[in-house]
Image (cartoon, rainbow, N blue to C red; front, side, top):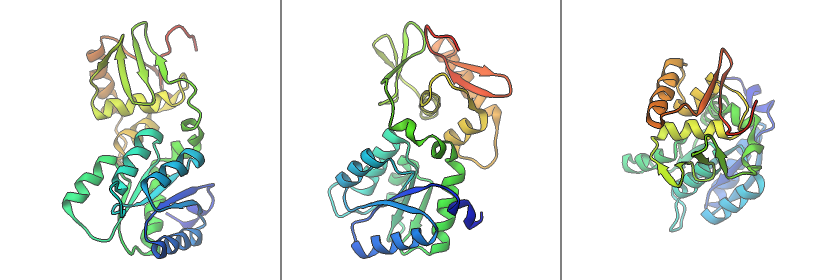
Length: 244
């Protein structure tokens, strides 16, 4: 991808790094790529506070923060609560650390010190795969309603990604949760098939049959279809008692 893909976007990056020299070096690299650094945080709590006030587009996080709470803890919070894509940094490669880091579903994993070209590729990948959220990042800052009512008995908790039948939680798979998350970010609006697919699977090859199979299994589990399929356009989540 060209550098223009980066430079032509209004794009904010949070750097979470507890070594000041490395943090400043990362900031310089990002600015040379034409990106805006919304802030530098050196701890879990400062990173969370920054995100709550600034809503960056992506977070570059050092896994090994010098604290009881690691960069993985930061990443898990940012992804679960704000769907902010993650690029991890680490000073060494370790299978156990990598396995734990993957739970927060990062888009890239870079070994320090990373070269500017490696950073450019990682950022470009994030922008390409997560483009739906770049256009709609304010959705995560403006959730007015915690619950979306789908049927008389079904409701989805957008803050905790939980589906309820009356007051009982329905156990969802990871991909089922992702499906509800992305369609509930802007309830009632149609989301394209490829945007949904890229959010759930992040694969280079688009496969609509995988998405349809996921919805078919979910429909059988719930005994109803919580989504509407609009021919050749995409899906939207159903809203109980409202017409579109």
